[in-house]
Amino acid sequence: MTEHEYQEALEWLFVQIPNYQIDGKRAYKPGLDNIKNLCSFFGNPQEGLKMIHVGGTNGKGSVTNMLASVLQEEGYKVGLYNSPHLVDFSERIKVNGKNADKDFIFRFIQKLKKELPEYIRPSFFEFTTIMAFQYFKEQNVDFALIEVGLGGRLDSTNIINPLLTAITNVSFDHMNILGNTLAQIATEKAGIIKHNVPIVTGEENPEIKKIFQEKALSVGASWKDATSISSELKSDLEGNYQKNNIKVVVALVEELNKMGGNISQNSLKTGLLNVQKNTNFIGRWTVLSRSPLTICDTGHNHAGLEKTFAQLKEYPQHKHIVLGFVKDKKIEDVVPFLPKNENFYFVKPNIHRGRSPKDYEDLLKKENLNYLLFESVEGGIAEAKENCKPNEMIFVGGSNFVVGDFLKMFLHK
Image (cartoon, rainbow, N blue to C red; front, side, top):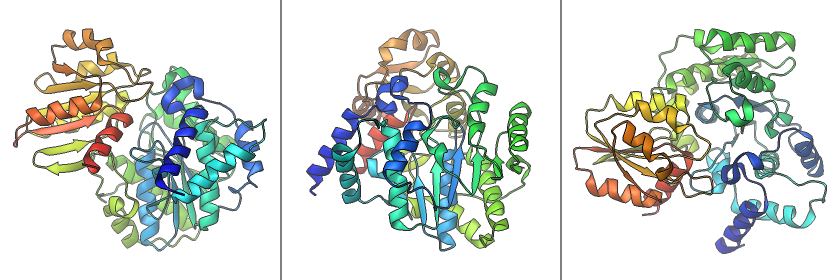
C-alpha cells in the first residue's frame, strides 16, 4: 500500500459513507441494530476487551487521554478511541499513543468496499467504531478507552459491556438530536449507565446529578460523584477546565484499583503530567508558539467557549482571535460574551457544514466587535499572523475543524 492508495481509500470512505462531521444530522443513525449487525459480521471483536466508556458534553477526550497516560505509566497497553480527528484519520484509534497502522486502516476499508453485506449500511462513525474494536483486539490491549461519539443511549459505542463508565458533564450541544433541555440531554447521556457497572460523574448541577444517581440506582450500578474529590494534582493539559476532568480521572483510578488495577499514586501523578507525550493528544489549550504566543483549543459549544474566553482574559496581551463555526451552532449565544477590545478573524471551516461568517455579520456589528471576515481558515490565520506583533498573541478556536486546519498548516509548514 502506498500513501496515495491510503489517501484514496480515505477519500472513498468520507464520500461514500454518511458522515456526521460533514453532513450533520442527516448522517446520524440512532439506534444499535446496525452496529450490532456490523460487529457480528466482524466476529464481535469488542467482546473480551476490558473497556472503559466515557461520555459527556465536554472533556471526554481529555479524560480518556489522561486516563490512558496514567495506565501507560503503570505499564499497561492501552487502546484509545477518540473523535473527531484533527489532522489525520488514524488519530481516532491509538495504542499507547501511536496512531493506528495505515496498512490496517487500508485493509479494513477494502473489506468494507468488497465484503460487507447489502443489509449493513454503516454510518462513518459506526464503521470507525468497529474498526477500533478490531484494532484493539488484534493489538491485544490491556484496556480500551472508548469515547462516546454523540449522546450516549443511541450512540454506536453503547454496544460495549465496559468495566467502568464515566460522564464528565452536561451542557447544551447537538440539541437538534439530543433534546432542548439539560434534563433531556442528561437522560440521553445517562444511557451509557449499565447494570452493575460503576459510574463516575463530574457534573456539578444538582438536578443533573440526581438524574445520573437515579439511573444508577435503577440498574444497580454504584455511583461516584467526582466533584466531591479534593485533588491538587496537575496536568500538562493547561486549560483551567481540566481541573474537573482531573477529578474524574482520579475517581476512575480509584474504581479501577478496587477491581485490582494496582495503579500507584506515582503513576497517577506522572501520567497526568505527561498526557501529550504519552498519547500525542493535541488541540486542548495547546501552546504552539511562544513568540508570538499562539494557542489553539477545540472548545466549540456555549459552555466550552465561555470557559475558553474566561481563561483568555487571564492573558494581558492584546489578542488576535481566529474563530469559525459550523451551521448547527447557536452563534447568537456566543457572540455577546466575546471581548470587545480584541481583533477577530471570523472564518468558514473548510467542510460542507462550515458556516460562512457573512451569515452572522449582523451579530458582529451589533456587538461592535473589531473583525474581518474570511471564507477560508487559511486566509484568516494568515491575516492574524500578519497583524500580530511579537508582544501580542494569537488564539485559534470555535470548531474542531478550524483547529484541525490550523494544525495541518502549523505542523506541515
